[in-house]
Structure formats: structure tokens, C-alpha cells
Image (cartoon, rainbow over all chains, first blue to last red; front, side, top):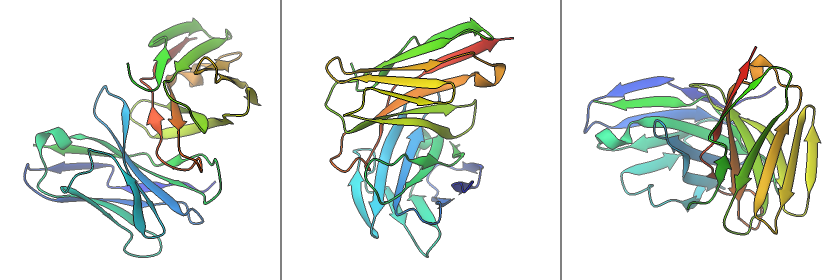
Length: 114
Length: 113
């Protein structure tokens, strides 16, 4: 069964550095999402992406964050000038371009900011 | 309180028993989805129920939705040790039903062999 893959599984970065989290969505999906889960807390929506542009973003998704679909398969989340509070599990998800479809999640990238 | 809250927060039952988890939400929705998360892993989609549906089944899973009470329940019958995980409900309020999900706080289910 096709799945969403994310790399790396764990990223350790110094505060202030930039990180890029990578995702390969399911190939025939056209909706892409990033979520994050701070340890012990709820899964929070960051951003959705459709037709090569952001369709919705949360208040968390400020100028520090950006997303890109650089080619036909990858979907990336860039975090500039990382802060300690950016430490979390980041999940990528994708969904089909049809009404009321489930979102399929990757296994996540655990980001640790030192 | 926030959109999407599950209860109980934690549930321990004997293998073979049924497990019921509940979810409440605050605003109108287009669909509600249940996900499972094994420790340290990603979210696995279990079942999606649309706002005009009242009940849905998938294998040992049964989901109900009561939009008048803004609540849903997930029943796992004949539980197995492998069902040990956290279970989350998530709501989609968009018109197309394909936008952001708002997750609940989750129920941590432990199946005792």
C-alpha cells in the first residue's frame, strides 16, 4: 500500500540554524499538509498546500516557516532561525483531490533544537 | 475548552473486551476522522464519517456520530494487545472536507494480555 515517507526520522539542530524537513507524499495525491506535535500535546495543523500554493495556514505558521514543492514528488517544510520551542514531531500528510477524503500521514520527523 | 476532546484520557482493559472512546467537538463539521498512533510513530487513519452519516463500521471498529450533540464514539470490539495505542479524533470543518484537521487530545488505550 502506498505511503507517505518523511526524512530524516530525527534531526538535531543548534538554535538559530535552518532546517528542511522532507516528505514524499502518495503519488496521486494533490493535497499536502504539515502538522506538528509537541511532546505530550495535541497534533496541531501548520499548513495545507494545493495547486502549488498555500491554501490555508495556522497562526503558528509565521514568517519563520515556508513550504515548497520543488519537483513532482517532494514536499518540504523549511524552518528558519530555529528556536527551542520548535522542538516537536513534524508530520507530513497527503490527501486525494476528492471530497471528504482521509489524510494519510508519514511517520514524522522528530526535531530537537539544542 | 477546545475543539476535539476525547474521553477517557486513558483506558485499560483486558484483551478480548470491548473498548469505547468518545470525542466531543464545538463547531459544525464536514467530517470526523479517527486515527491511531503507536508510541513514537505516525498517525494511522482508521475511519472517516461524514456529517450526514450516523454510523460506520470497518472490521472490528464501529464509529457513531451525533451532530446534534457534537459527539462521536469509537468502539473497538474483541480487543487485542496490538490495539494498544493512542486514539485521536479529528474534525474537518471545510466545505470540501479536504482541508485542515483539528485534533483532539487523544485517548491512551492499553490492552492487558
